[in-house]
Amino acid sequence: MNGYKGFGNDFKCRGFQFEPGKTYEHDGEARACASGFHFCESPFDVWTYYPPSDSRFAKVEGMGKTDKNGEDSKVACTKLHVGAEISLNAFVNAGVKFILDRVTSEKKETNTGDLSAATVEGKESIAMVTGMKGKAKGKKSCWLVLAEWEERKDGWHIKDVKSVAVDGKKIKEDTFYTLKGGEFVEVK
Image (cartoon, rainbow, N blue to C red; front, top):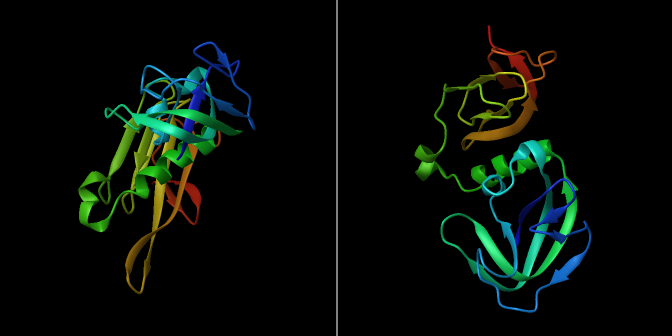
């Protein structure tokens, strides 16, 4: 079972030292929130436990016996392989992909609607718009996540999804952007 794990800046989780590329085994049982190694299937659920502002992240594979907590996508396992560390940008993109992979045309109401706009102001907040012709803006240190759509013979489909940090230079504060041709473009 694949997922994502958060760590402190020292790559420790609850006092246990991890290292990318290594596999760890737990001798006891797997019990969510109580025993075993833990990770989340949904990248964004990891932020409940490790905030993006002062954490590190990695792709992981949970093996052996597993247990889920039922509240989010958190999983406990008896064997965990820690893959490569991933950047915050790659982590956000993985989170968006996780969501979009679960959205179907029958359940489109779970996704942001077409022509929608999102605005964020909190430090390292994320504005995400995945509908057609969406736009997003934020304050410096926030992230924008946008989808670009294209029409094909069998209907409209997502062409691209990208994220970018509002740095105040390339991506300006309080300015709406949309995704066109794979690039963030100011909305006039």
